[in-house]
Image (cartoon, rainbow, N blue to C red; front, side, top):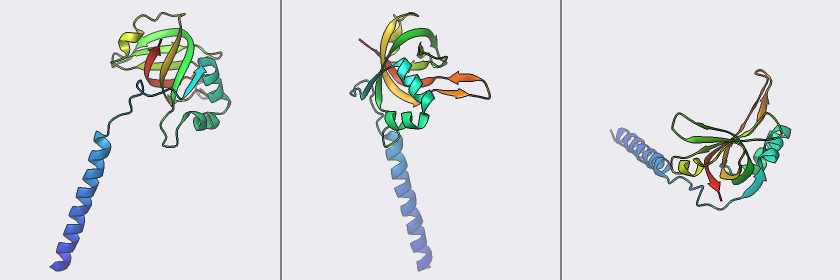
Length: 153
């Protein structure tokens, strides 16, 4: 009977510790990209080209050791504006190739993108979620995807 109690206590301790770790990770505050300083300023042309030339090297440059993206300020010309299913603005910045930089705004920063028009030159602050690449099966370019974006003045 003693052995069963010890095993029960070990299992209970494991559940409590696991629940504590899960709660900590789940409720941990998200990084405030707009309040954080910019790590790198770059043009949309250069950003896309670096990913097309060598994605691994670009990831080393633009991702932090923990895997989070560094905070970028990307300058480019607006080539398109859409709204996604979450009513978030998505602004596309031209590059020298068919790939673009896709900048998804947040509900809080959406109003700052309302005044943008195709052809405007802008500087957008955000973080990278995916780099540009060429999909040989589909024979098309995939865009650099940035999120948590806002227009810098």
